[in-house]
Length: 423
Image (cartoon, rainbow, N blue to C red; front, side):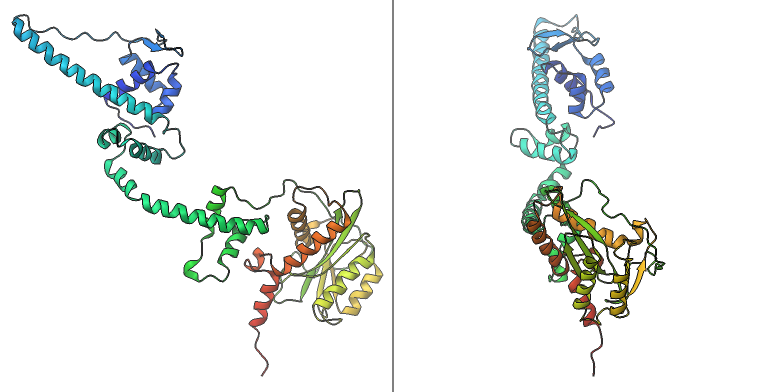
């Protein structure tokens, strides 16, 4: 942080630092002192000796024009020999004192230079004074690095509090690390929700603090590096209206569902396929099915599983199920199953993934958090195992931002708790 006014003493010290530092450059010294290069060049022209120390320690001519050093004025012509000796001794003592002072301040500035390159310039200056206060006067140190002594002492008085905060942050980082090791996909919002679960209001941790501690500790949720399109809608020969109109909300569980099929690539070049049925109210995965084909039976199994989750053959009665125009969803067999379960079909426009964005988002989240940077699953068995673990944990444990960072099952349970009980 450059200051506007510099004392002549400071300017001369800067020039001396440049001339006496082996291999020094104007740019390097200016950056160390927090001044612009043009200012230092001007000082060198005004106060420089015309010599500088090369990298090998030898004196060379400075590339900058320097003014010759000023000669001390001669004494009075009528002074006696004794007076002249006394005057010269006084001047010599003053010069020695000035030389000692300049040497000391040059040493201070050389020590301070390494502190000025740190991130927080003000804190670095405070720390420099603290580190060198046993060697030099605090008053002189503060003056040279341009800070108020009162500010330095206030900073020093706050050291115990900073130490306590650092210890508390370290303890919080360990708690965050435990949560992240259990699920490396969680970011600051879900970590905050996990830390505050069941904690009294006065003891909860702020999400901004969690984010700051995670950054400092190098902890971050997984972020997909690239996006791959996984669903290609197919044209349909049936006229099924879009009943959701991209409104993926519901006022209660069991009213609106969305679903989709996504492929699960295996290392041998084949795929498994996942069909889903997701509740719009809680984002709960009400039903799902995995198979090595994309026949109609796959989506039928997922819808049947959702009906079982919601209480049997009548569990989906009156509900809307929204999908894309994939051939399995437009088949007559699937239409018959929906009619038998009391489900009304809804479909978005052909070739528009945004019309089924909730299901598309679910598929992307699943692959991002399970596959992460891997391109595929090693084999079918591992794929099924990992999928089962993530899908079940998605409902019961994984905190969802839509559910106010509760799991979908917990979100539905709390909704049910608000319903009036029968007399």
